[in-house]
Image 1 (cartoon, rainbow, N blue to C red):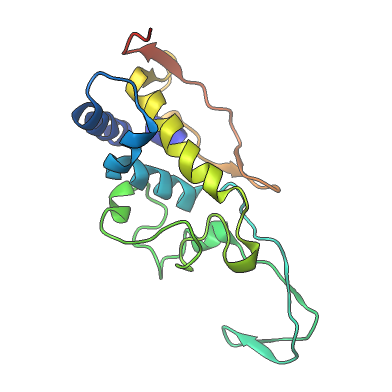
Image 2: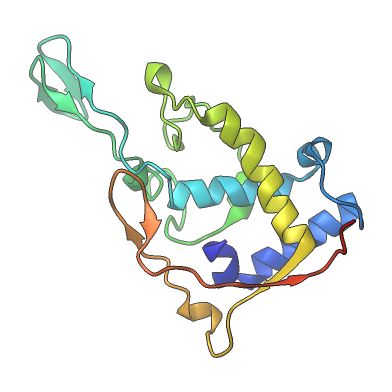
Length: 188
């Protein structure tokens, strides 16, 4: 939501997609596959702000394993920095820019098959919450955008939204986000 408030043109485009594909009815789970731009927003947000910035440590099981020109000793612990991978300029053009359109042109999913995009990890250490996240995040975000117009409190400009992350076991914004929801669709 912080990225959408910082980038109002992206939010408007998402709301236009929802209006075109869903109309005035409430968003249902069956509507979610019809929303490619919404999915692109979610992927781009997870690229820049992965919930878990570091994967669980991996233990080197053989002596002499080489990665990127470095030889790792047996029993060394290796941590993969998902946050840094999402901002790697060799994998992403303009990596620090929020640009959901990049995912409309690129077949990349959450399942850990594309090393440049692993917000849920990969392989045996794939996050067990992936199926829940893949189902719930699009439905929740689509509902929030479709049923409310979101604004910043008076006196706060879009450029004032602080997107700096606080590192820990999980990522959170350094500055709490304050947003004002204005109802769009009356619900029964």
